[in-house]
Length: 299
Ligand code: ARG
Image (cartoon, rainbow, N blue to C red; front, side, top):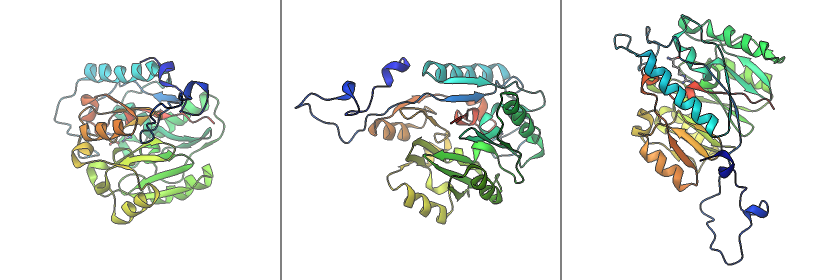
């Protein structure tokens, strides 16, 4: 569907949304409005699984770079068809996980917090991504003191930054991020190694809505999530296992694994427009659609 058609203003917000008197209301299902985003992606030119730093990665299994490229291009095309702007960073040889742009940095209000990776195999990606931001003219950049894996573990919901820890991002990074961005940072502890980054266990749907898999979090973090988002969409184990939470939402369209059938039904019921997107080749590295996407929140 062309982007313009999906940006109908919410009912009551202007002439186009005004309902004629007597028309039945659909109060329970909100009208969802997409907002165009600027995204950064990295083509999987050097994609491979030749080391293992999460339970999904099995280096002895063959990968196919050509398939990875085609699957990734479908995601890239879809973003553009939906009206988003996609910037590209040049993939570097020897960095097979660089395709997972979400991990490259965290950008809020045009400020860029660099990524400092936990594993040596990915260390060089941090400065590589930060150089891209410098070249693009970003001036408010921070090379971090503590380990953090960018938007893999930092997810902005409205003006609150949810921050994962437990496997990758160091908890001390949360205070560093709060100080740098000046937005409240809420730490959440991940406990299941299959869901090692926050963006594998929780997805942001709108400025105040999320969906998540409760079992991926410690009991305390689960309680925090219930408190903050009592109406959240809860994922089943099956949804989480097919990486259904590694999803991207523009406020209306939600791009996620087509196998996450329970989530897809829940999203439709809430007025979202789920779009199935599958990246089986990249999944061999433990990554999905959201992992391939870094949001450039320039203002
Ligand atoms: N193989 C990569 C790793 O383990 C996958 C990263 C996925 N990225 C993400 N944002 N969850 O680091």
